[in-house]
Image (cartoon, rainbow, N blue to C red; front, top):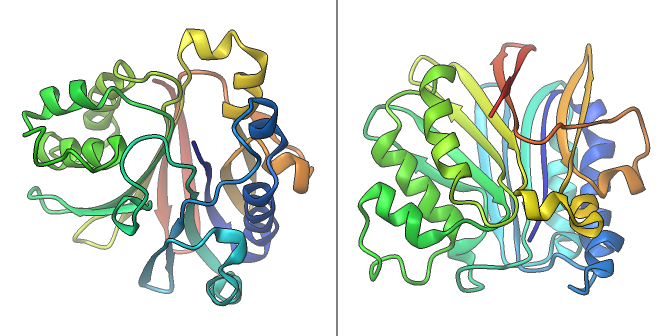
Length: 263
């Protein structure tokens, strides 16, 4: 499984969180305590929205070894930005650039979105819900399959439309359903939807809980959700996201509005 970050607000507030995700992807004590090694080295990627532009980057390099890309991204963290980051430790799907997240999709309903996920879904169940061909998607990850489901089923990224689909996907979770989806609409509006959810079996194991919990950081200049290991490298005033929580974020020009709901 993986390390993730979503943040919107002032770039100077986001930079230390991003650095913490890089460091925790190289040395993750929570992962090591679970007997899964200490690194997330199966590729990484990000989506950055700033100044009316979007950059989507993916690489098979470990995030902590991709020096040129890190330097470029850090240089863009000024002013108001929106960023999502994923450092992969593969669980489903082959280790390839294709399966590095975030994934990008363009919906037939007229919007673009980028998706990342930390956890394991019942891929066969997701394919059933989306009426997909299993042979065609044999080598793709469960997260990519989830994205295809959204392309087929999600008609618009309004909160009331999103909730039934993400609740259906939560029912296929085998461990974590920690997700970030960033939507870009034809009129230029941007929305983000973040979920923080674990199965009952997962929350009952302290090692799994420490590894899988998401941290929330909010002030006037920043709203961010990050993997648990961020606090080891950037200790600050986090709140732990309650289980089965979702955040719907409206992102404007230099501003954001957050609504928290039960998933």
